[in-house]
Length: 370
Ligand SMILES: [Zn+2]
Image 1 (tube, rainbow, N blue to C red):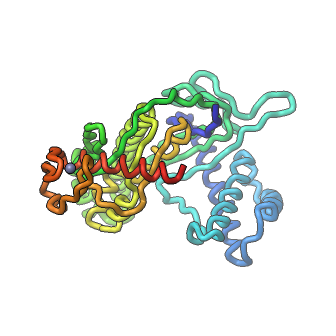
Image 2 (cartoon, rainbow, N blue to C red):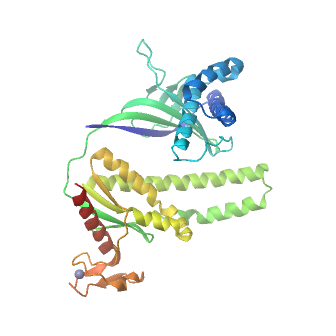
Image 3 (cartoon, rainbow, N blue to C red):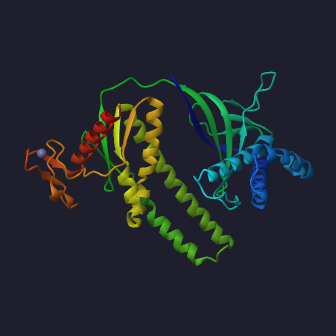
């Protein structure tokens, strides 16, 4: 049994007053973040604990900072602290100011148990109790399992509210299976599996391309910054949001299915990196979202005790006959979809042969490292 962290995301349905307080809380968290970032820019970043003391002082001077729940401001400081730590490690660039105009603005509050045993965050049926806000309805589309850690409240610039509830939960590993697969990620099909299955792309963009084109043209005709301009901009935001949701849902379902069915999965990550460098291909790849897919496979494999082998070295997966190892240079030509091996006479579908090679390469790597 292992413990994992998980987040449940739901649409939040605050009433008018709750909306006002959420907007204020989001604003205060942003203010605190930017205020201390500004300070850090003036005289170097010090530490979370120093800024935390200064925050207490600041709250005495600016009474309005006392309105939102206190965890939200502390967490804004913690986020700033993490941004600086990441910057010092060379992981990310220098922290940036948070803008009101970001598509999403949020604050985070922590669960806290009082001496009496009561807690500041509770869930009953389809309502959640949050500090200072009281009970708020939310669209509870699934049961929440596990121990609540914290809750992030998000407001989008399309005026929607969401909560993300972070929990820790115990998970049972899946029963072991013998199945092993290699996956060849493609553009025509999203993925080709070594067992012969071809998984079509969630053809989302095509479906919405016309709509986006129309809205973009309409946006270009509006005066930048005018009310109508913002209206169209909002509509565009909604379409993009919808596309992102459909795509993520597709990736979640597919990665869960593959992890459940197989003990070992091999993917080629170098190909993803190389193809993303090619700007023409990058657009269509971001459309099929390979990187996100690999990320999902990685953490789900960890959760469920499966093996994920990533191939990050170059090898000619499509030219080798996966049966006898003969290298067929003719297959370099992308137009060759099916071919017969001159050596062993195996007849190949180009992509399925490639995914079998990926599986074999992954097994070799695994054997040499364990
Ligand atoms: Zn052969």
